[in-house]
Length: 108
Image (cartoon, rainbow, N blue to C red; front, side, top):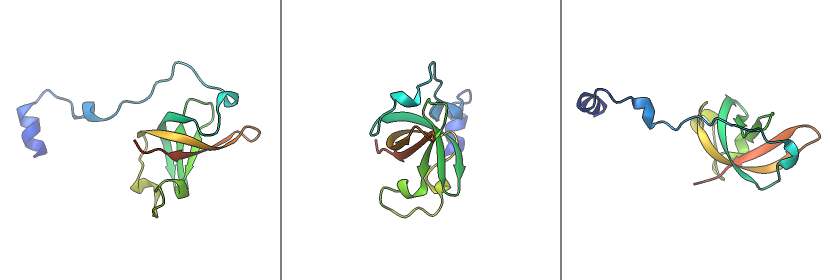
């Protein structure tokens, strides 16, 4: 099916269908963040215990593997997220003293 679509529209770039990266014109400060805030984020790194997400602060926030499945078991974070994914996240813990932000995925 994919080949037929490409033959019908040879000049179309299949990358146009992917969500675009978030380019931030300003950087938030940790002091402006509040627990419960919902923000757009871009996955920067996926590791065995979770994923680091850029939310516009100098430090990336962490979505721990236990906060990914909305109550369902997740075997590995790459089952749900990949580097470059754009998603909505909510701040569930904020530790300004240690520069740590813990996030969870928000369903659209």
